[in-house]
Length: 86
Picture (cartoon, helix red, strand yellow):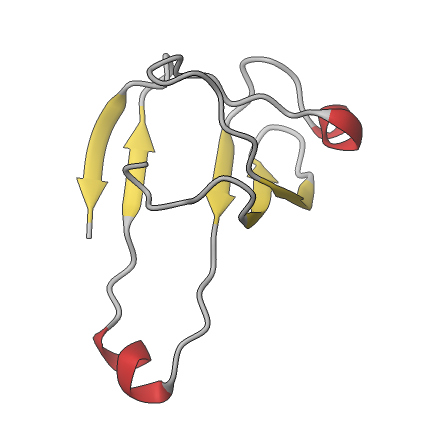
């Protein structure tokens, strides 16, 4: 929610620990669970405890793109919010 990523939205996932990079979609977990789970074929791309970067994209017209500010949510090792930048 803090990153404004919606259920069902397509995302890219980068695994810093093994170099994997793949596309998947968001399946919400229970609120405040602090869980990021890779389901199905994506589960072969990472293991519990590995560091991930989740990217979402938006298509805009040029005028909106010039005003766009990315929203970055950084979590600690227990998936608690450390920093929110926008």
